[in-house]
Image (tube, rainbow, N blue to C red; front, side):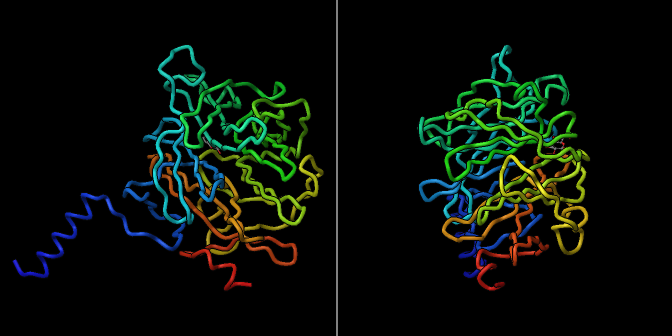
Length: 329
Ligand code: GAL
């Protein structure tokens, strides 16, 4: 064996044992994305919370076809993610709403300053009932990475609730945006002060058969991206803007996506929009490229949101990094 090859072998073995994965400094939408341990990231339909100088990515833990709860990863730089474990698993208790075999989708976590608790909402489908339960579910934890304690599941104000997101506004009020009435209506409900329940302040944003809501606020304007309702298959995204969360929401003509496969949102479906900490106006569009043959292998599409003269576009990029906004002013 020559000495160069021997050295290479030694380094490979040591790196393997220490589970070292090379640090990455770029996003590669649609490609396999590994955590710092070298395992494929399993956090679909997710959302991110930035707190104490760390990003926490919560997402659906999937096996081939089913659902296994909510995973959480942490990162300081948005590129490299450390697996923190299962934030909320499925219950062994056969009487629990989240018993094994249920479906937990699109989890989002926000922090409640009054109660000092982390509050998770997600879309829950009960075991063996397909997508007919259409409920919102709430769990809570003192520690961001969990374990979260399941509180309850319900239909907000009696309305069906499937795809959903949470939004905490600057004044501390938080809202759930949810697809209702067999996904024909997109609704919003204000949460109680402890974020554990929906209030009766609940209104329809629009009735256009849209789902997968992803929302952000910039310069006192709210931007909402949604998808059509075609199950796991991708479709064209839509943008609405408003100056009040409760509406009215104005549709913006045209497709906010640009580039090859823009009409299928680059083969993906919106999940969340994450502000880059400390960088005003820098937002990341986060979407899922679902693989219904093996949901674990659904990929992530992260792309920079480009805002110019009050217009929003999201362009396809094969790879990019966080200096994108500085170099594309
Ligand atoms: C989509 C939805 C996904 C998942 C899927 C199941 O419409 O956005 O979150 O529920 O249907 O078919």
